[in-house]
Length: 163
Image (cartoon, rainbow, N blue to C red; front, side):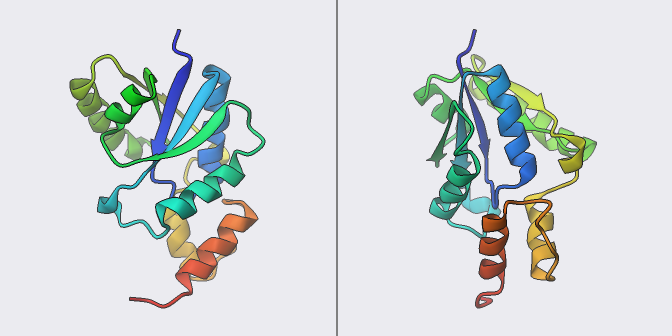
């Protein structure tokens, strides 16, 4: 049995949906690494360090979870960490095509590493970081989607100077 799994993502910013997947993941795997992707292709709003800090606060009370960053292929990171499983969240059917494509590509690169999909609680099934950034930029109350410190950081970041 695999003792350690990786839940990779951009987490820009972390949401209650991400936290729900993390809680579900540690019910299956005794050790879960939440891996923050540097991923410059997504042009994240928050720096890697800011995302690591927000996630560390979010999981502080969840045993068996550690937070790390990576900037290489996720399967290479998984091998470095001796993790045989990647966890991916599926919110809606619209996520499936992209996630399936990524899982098959990862399988081609690393047939020894499995991908499993977990669904968040239905309360969070429609929440995306991108949507929250847009809503926050328009002044929406995000308290039911993210922890207070994330909402504060998000609103501070998006109200800053526009470039």
